[in-house]
Picture 1 (cartoon, rainbow, N blue to C red):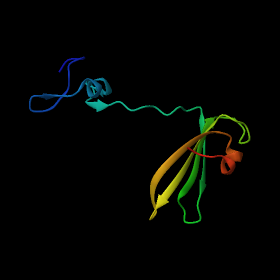
Picture 2: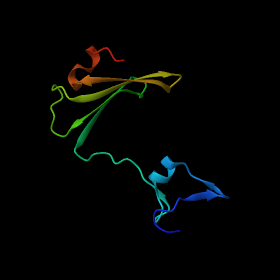
Picture 3: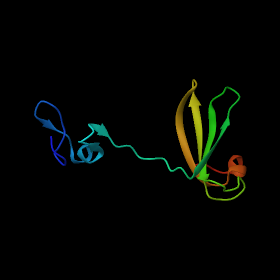
Picture 4: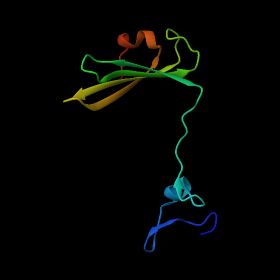
Length: 99
């Protein structure tokens, strides 16, 4: 199979255009989105050990400085059921209204 050829998974069925773009034909591997290495992350846990908040910001950004991508998780029977997003600072995470 040459470079640029569509990858065929089985039989005569070709992948969709999106699948073809994310597949590296020469390596027979799928491309993944790279996580930026200039980011820092913070996590806050509930009493039962589940993650309540997760936050991501550029390295070196203070916890009290706006610019954090914050996520709040809710659970049912220890399983995550919602993830809500807010942009602000890590220190103020408990005072925000997540949507």
